[in-house]
Image 1: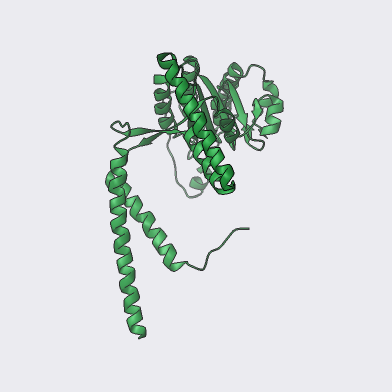
Image 2: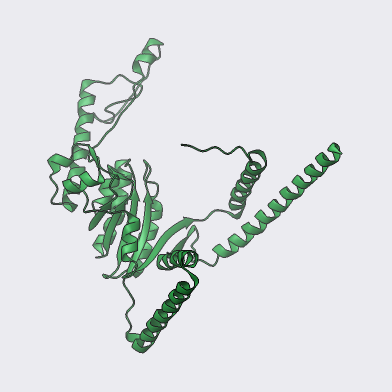
Length: 350
């Protein structure tokens, strides 16, 4: 009897695995077909989400759950009446009807190389194809900073919006420091959550040096250059005071460029007070003039949804169908294993 149950259990597990695999393949095919309905290019596609509709869906979901039936019906009736009145007004106005201004919502999640700039430049290009002077861009920015040239390019992408007269608001929910703040300071208005990390207007560089270790093991490193300062500090050769002095000079010059860039866009800042390399939480950053308002991006969007049409833009690079199916199969496999092997042994962090 036990052997029969074991064999039956193994057969059932095989059937479940086969069914999951078939569903994953079908899901991948359907997903690929759905993607083809979006506006695409050779290397990716722009996805657009109407956030007003998302807010409406959330509201209806909670209304359906918490209101008594009579109040729920009255609420739905009121909404239908308001929608009918809006449609009638638009129809009456005809061609002269003017749509609401729009807000385009973008996201930038920065790493040390500002890798997200490739996506950001696509999204900004798309916005500039349709934006008018009445429209606004909200950038939800999260970055602790990174390479100077990479964040310089990211900041230049944002300047394209200002150059075309499109209002730019930057919202920092967690961190915009160093290169992240260099991007943020371009905005017409900077919002920050109370405990968001802001500032760090400074430049840092560190170079490990293994010269003494190599010398101890009788290993020589020959470094040949053309140009007095082609190399200032090295990782393997012996560094000199002259090289260190030149390297420090280059850091100071970069810092001066950074301060000048911030000063150009935030003219009221006391640069001597804020350009020390320190960072501050949102509330203190507002006192120093680094940000304009203490507010999360969610608060800002909810406050603007009645007055603007909100559109979230996201450029997604294409992946081959085999890659997408591989990821789907892997995720399904992980979930299946987790269900069979870890049921009843869930842990929580406290």
